[in-house]
Length: 314
Length: 276
Image (cartoon, rainbow over all chains, first blue to last red; front, side, top):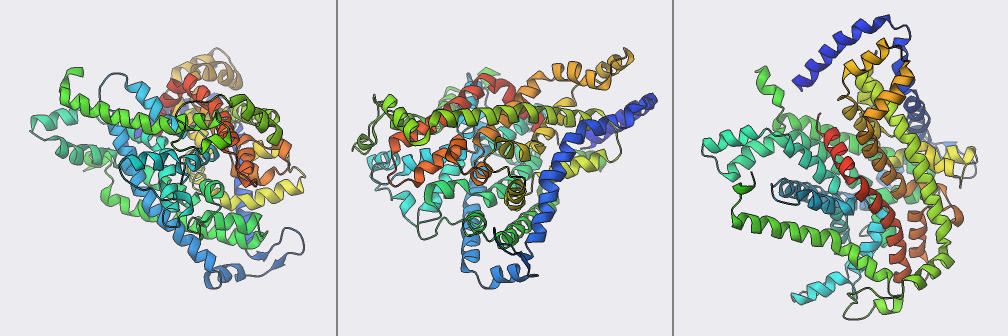
């Protein structure tokens, strides 16, 4: 952090000498202008518009009517699927987020070992993350299929009578967690980058002091990685709340709505029941939850995230 | 460094790596097995573990039920156009954020990062309404345009652009090169590995993009691969042979693309993601 700021300051002094270029002041704005246009047309504009129509009864065809907070009141007080889908998403997030972080970190540590052919392993481990959510869903539909699936076939070797994963309300959500974990190589890469940035002399100094592997992991690796853990934690929570493709393709939300995610509820209200205003209210509620969770994670991070700069400032 | 591991350590590391390889590749192999067998045979017990000879037949029936060739073309055209345009936009904006000092720069950049957090569900309906009023349903433009200004691409470019020496740009200015010439001839040329990383990232995003094309494309000859594949599942009788071949066809190009450029991709992501 502190090094970042100091380089910015020195750059500022360098660049201030360039004021003699007349065009200098608008050139950077020209460079960012395509993004700015895109931002207003396709992000900021729609964001505001979405907030506006959330206060309307807005069918896809027919008359629109201002209804105030009616959509919000309706979903909190009179819509069982709102609460049940929210519960499914929370359950998914509670299972998915910790597993995803732990597995990604474990794989990153494994890939950071100095043995031969590591870059090949790194590429192979990342392969599941390059394919589309739809293809991933299909492959896993095929792996999970109850009677004929390869997973249950292998489970039968160790004497386990596998469930009919996707048709069993107790297992469908677990199956989705497993399928999602398979495609999360990006977190692994980000952790790996963080590991490579930890100065080796910290470990060497710790070894001289007689620290064991476990001590080094908890006293050096985890603190040094904590900003990246924070970043990955936030991104994983956001991803968990947006999970839609798997449910749409694998189960359609079933069986017995056990995989009817909140994102699916929002989607169906809009594009199956065509209640655009109501769905926008749902989506805004989701946005607020994600913002709130991010805020909480950020606030709590001062307790557990360690920034290198802190030491120097004290 | 290599000698710091004992034999036992190495055995443990390689066994974990081997398990990882099986888990990473196994399902792909199983997909390929499915694609080479007729749907009926797929339900044999014990399951078929070796490739069959039904690949061509599966492709013919896939072409009949979906018009697969047109769909592959749709996907390719959309993903390639998007990649070229969006990479350029990302590079231009990333360059400005990394190498220029302007009013509000850091605030604007922070806002850009915040937009990554907006759930796409929030903008889905307004974008849909926008495309309806423009009468752009079922067009390539409707799929391509909304995501062209891709915040994460800009973020990655900015992180990588920081490594361009200021002296290089300064020297070109002194030689009298215009700002846009500097960008196109010097900046883009020195940034080739980073451009490759961002390009493959953007290509992957668009090739795999599902929900937005699903919403905006409703005529089957305009479908992209993910949308077409998902429509197979809705059919009365799920033909796993066709399905797995479809999955293979949507997976193979992106994998090849990735394998060719994986070095640049991984180092681009590694270089970009850690500095903050």
